[in-house]
Amino acid sequence: MTSIKLSGGHTASVLTLSVQTKTNQLVSGGENGMLCLWSEDGRLVSKFSRPGVECTSVLFSKEKPNVIYAAFGEEILILDTLRLVEPVFVFKSNQDEVNQIVLDPKEEFLAACDDGCEIKVYGLQDRKVFKTLRYQHTNICSTALFRPNRKWEIFSGGLDCRFVHWDFSKPKCLRQLNMQESQATPGDESYMLNPPFIHHISSSPDGNTFALALENGKIPILDGKGKYLQPQYTLHAHGQGVSQVQFLSESSLVSAGNDCSVIQWDLSRAEFAQPGLFSGTNTRNTTDFSISDSNPEEEKCLAITRECKVHSYQHTSKINWLAVGRTKDNVTSDGNTHRLFVADQTTDISVLNVT
Image (tube, rainbow, N blue to C red; front, top):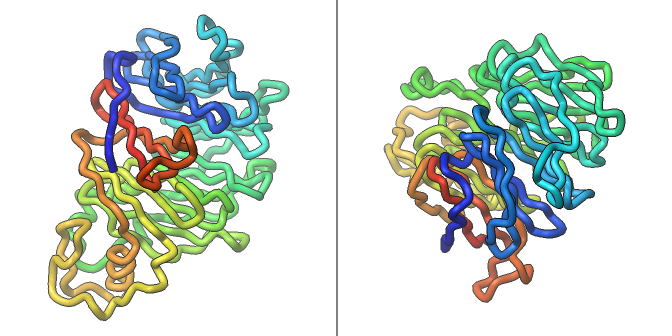
């Protein structure tokens, strides 16, 4: 992975990114309320500022290339890239700071999860609150994702370690997974120091596979082909908390974390893993935790981790956000087909070419 940088836009840490799939433009949001629009070739096109509040989440419309949704504190702004002077509309119903905004596949709804443990679902046609999802999270709701191919379903994750599956039309909780229970393993001394907070959720384009980014450095992979998501295995991915997971394709996944590393995974190789090859301690090349006295399920996950890891890139700073775009000519001279935009604790945005 080779890296270039986009500079000159932000004056504080970049928190969030989004790529417009048709134009390959990039939008970024930062700590000091700065939002920047970048061209496909990396030029700073324009800025929008809302001083005194962080821009915590940005999102390009897929259907309308000039429309951006951006969260500033408790508010969500609709912006027009052709006139980044003032918002077209402002949603003001969240009662606490918004952590992430997401769109459903048909762009009929926008969901905003916040520090108040709630998810507001807004109708984009009438621009009103459609439903409020509450009473399931007991701590900050940090991430959300509409389920592909299931119109009324959405997932959320939080710092209570809960992964919640909702029918937002009712609204009601369909199922809940507690990462504190599913991620606890015998002799795992890091468990109490790094609880499995859920920082991010991502799904493959076909909606058949889901990945969760956890504070304990692990990435649970879930099967989404049935009515309810079923845990498959866990990648022992990073030495510190995982901040982001993003699918490049049905089986290609990229993760990033507080250990300053970006890792690319080929999940199609999981079936070739051979747990019996692991013996002794510290044989993994992903983290430095001991694997002695591990149970069979743990050894299986360690073997899958080793088999599925394709590339690792050591970044220079803790990573806040990842966004995936296509390369300008769909493929570079060295065979890369994706551009990975990396936001970190600096004022620059790094761009990596990945397959």
